Length: 165
Image (cartoon, rainbow, N blue to C red; front, side, top):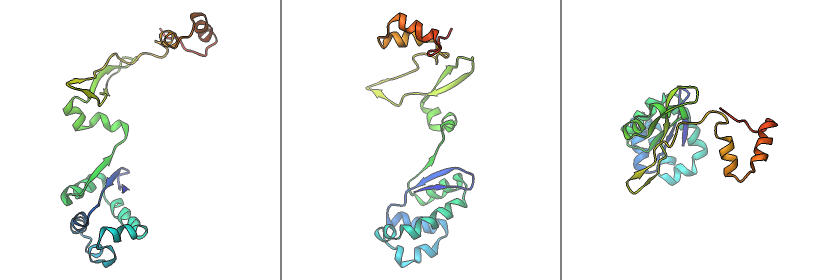
């Protein structure tokens, strides 16, 4: 289940077994849920989703994402913080594994871009080039699509295609 937390973040929590449920209830201090005979087995909890999910979402809404993750780690239940793209730049795993490649944007800003998560044997794919400026490759791209030079010039002249520097 995906839960919103008190700090405006989200976390996915996977309580998928009776052992997960027991550990979650104990760590979360929810003896009331653990004692509920109608929630004793995974199949019962699935049947009671309409009642149970709002209760669990309300519980996690009272925690920060960090607290929710800490609870899931302590209870040894599957979880995953739900990230937004800008979180990639601070991701410890990406930083430690070389998953972010340095690049320079057309305006001169130095930043990092995610590496393609593909390996073929021992080969991984690095950065081929820095991102081009607006329209920098227009003619080459259109030529590669088989568009005739006079048609490309007409498209640029009409302002339909941007030709960069």
